[in-house]
Structure formats: C-alpha cells, structure tokens
Image (tube, rainbow, N blue to C red):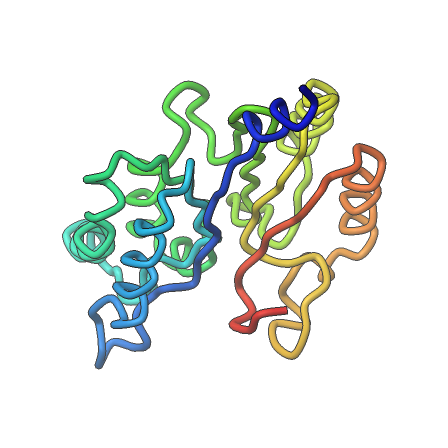
Length: 212
C-alpha cells in the first residue's frame, strides 16, 4: 500500500553543530555537547549531520595541538561512534584558522572515496549533500569545482528528498552579517537559485549561534 511504502521510507536524522569550546580558558568540549550527543543517540537516527566548528582552532599552532583538539571532540563523540551511527561533518571556519587545524580536519573528515570536503550520500529516498564553505581561497562561497560538482549532483538526485549542509549560511541573522555567503551576493544568489531549481527540501547551516 501507499501508506506502507511511506512508512518503509520514513527515517529520522539529527542536525547539530558549532559545539566548539568557548575559549582557550575553557578548552574542553562544552557540557551541552555531551548532553546533545546523549540525546541524539537516544533518538536512534539513521545519521547525524554536524554543521561544523568542532574545535576552537585558532590556538592550534602545532600539529600536536590540533590533534589534541580533534581527539577531545572525538572523545566526547564516542557514544555516536560506539553505536555506529553515520556522522557527517562539514568544515567550519574554526577548523581553518591555522594550517594545522585545517590539515587535521581534512585528514579525519574528508570523504574517503573522493578525497574532497564536499560529497553526498543517499539513505532510502533521501539525498544528503555536504558542502564546504571553507575551502582554501574560496571561503564564504560555493564556487569553482565544488559548484560544478554540486550542479551534477543535484541532477543525479532527481526524485529524492534533498537536504544540504554547509557551515556559513546564505542569509545570516543577528551575527556574522559580513562573512557568510552574503559576502559574495551574486554567487550566493546563484547557489540559492540552484537550490530552488532542484527543489531542495532544507538547507542546514551553522556559524551563527542562534536557532532560526
């Protein structure tokens, strides 16, 4: 039956992000992130999306320090890993503050098949796209090879529910009004047009620390 088919295709997933430590004086993962992980695992989702900014980043002035920060994130994230819940993470600006932080993030979280920080995955009748608003020399924009890849990927996703994740929002509110994707309005509008053209269901972004 149609109802049965809808039930078979139904799924739940979790979106979280910007869980980085507050400052160098409080370098541990925040208490609230541990609670968010606990709640997310209890929901038994098919996957979890993280909108970026896992670590403080700007104090990662050595390979060792960068590794310590991401190790601390993974320690707090262990309950998700132990349940084998797929976790997809986009790069946030805090992971790009230093060369060491950028390299540590890419080593751990780039797509293993493509070697890129942007990619997509399919789950049942849903298509999840992870974009990177922090590529070197391309921050605050989706352009170049990534944009061309996105155009092709959206075409291939025909008929599925499409969800997109990136760190910097297209239309920031309250904060980060000058360093989000609106920094390049023409490129932002082209991206928004693509999302409308291919009937993207939802775009999830971080960077601005509010729920909007």
